[in-house]
Length: 221
Figure (cartoon, rainbow, N blue to C red):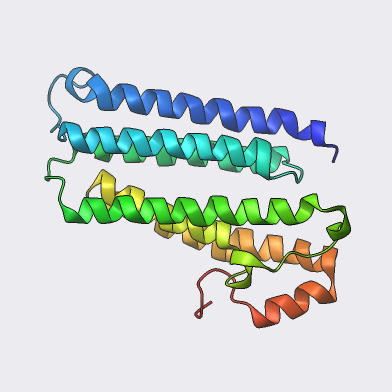
């Protein structure tokens, strides 16, 4: 697939995500008060600010990753899966982040730390691979250094950690279904599909790497 063939799918995900974040910010700013006739509980301004900031940071990271760091083809099938999923994630966090009345305590700040850690895992792993691939001598070579020496898919691990933190900041138990669902999708759908592609592309090099390296969780699986 030529790089230009990815423009439409990437644009769809970007537009959907921008729209979801805009709706989330509106809801967190005044929608809790006005959109439902005052019947909803209203979270503290600090929680709503935190959820809004995390939503914007994730949007910016996704756009940078999509347009700068990841150069592989991005087909419509992936866009039609990723686009609605990020909309659901953002709107879920906004809903609970806007209506959770519990105070912002140390648990919430632990969630912020997890969010930052997950963001770093995802973004830095992609940047490490990007730097490796920029060297013409590494063309066609499987990258197994940096964070990829810990697990085969550190970017996926980063997303799970990130959304665990995001869910904690949003508040309540229901948002925690998001990282649980995400981890299950990675384990049973995305990782097997991607590993099959990598094995087909890199052959014995990937098989040796996969034999020695955990897939998603260091030292466990």
